Length: 109
Image (cartoon, rainbow, N blue to C red):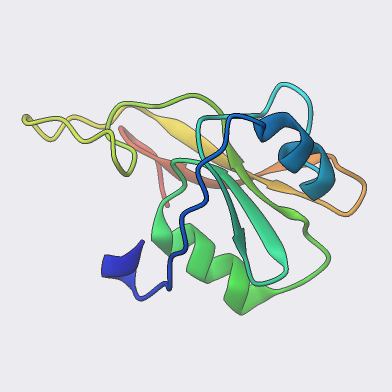
């Protein structure tokens, strides 16, 4: 994230569920990393360009989620450059998720 112009402050904790609940991460959409970026949360290995797009577009979103650790997502790069298809989802003000960006084979970010 630093390489993409974000200021990063790391807070390591074993008590992640209360943080995810406070931010509004939908049940079943959790991942290994949770971030607060401006007024939004980012859950999982979401590409920086998607975060920048959310910040630019604004709106009533709570944040972005990418459950799991898809091959080729940021931090999960493969030596052969392979990227499995994955969808970053936008979480609206009611906590519902909607496709935001598709990456990987035949995806169009």
